[in-house]
Length: 231
Image (cartoon, rainbow, N blue to C red; front, side, top):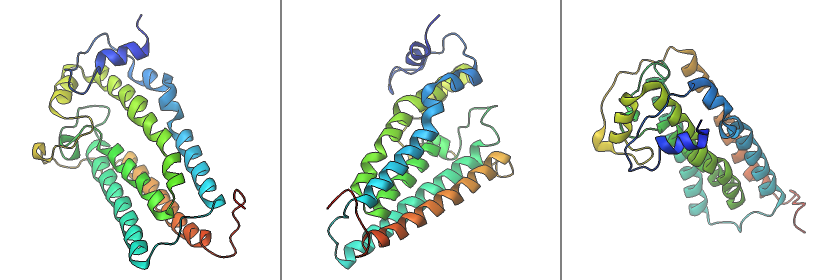
């Protein structure tokens, strides 16, 4: 019997190679057996926690001029809300159909993983709001985990679940690179689902975290703030 890694490689050898569906996998069990899938949430939490701690325990970057500060602030919030809008838009299209069909409309006609695009944009906003290269570096491990392990496993599950229908979708829509010329309008059907409501509640938590980072940046630059990792 082929290992999970071998089956994934058979399904997704590269972005340009046509998808081939081999022996079916158990959709639920395969995802939950994946270490990358199980570790994705706690690794993200640990990376965020370590990154924020290191950023606050070391001296901040030299103060920028007021125009640069405002530019970074506005850019951080623009990136964050862009990611949040993409996640809400994507959830409205997929939450009602994720387990039953291959969604080819709305954001899923532009690329195969718009939800993760939204997540990556929100995460990219955090170092901007805290003005911290350290936090940016600490967020690389979970991002790489999603890119190199979580998404391939999820797509292998989709291939086993939907067969040639999903293979055809993969041939026409890129995994990551957006193709706005291929956009197909579709009707959002998931706005009344429990999954969509969980997504909106989750975004409220992420918004609170972003606001907290903005306040921490003010404290970090205060004269009384201690930086124990630097003299």
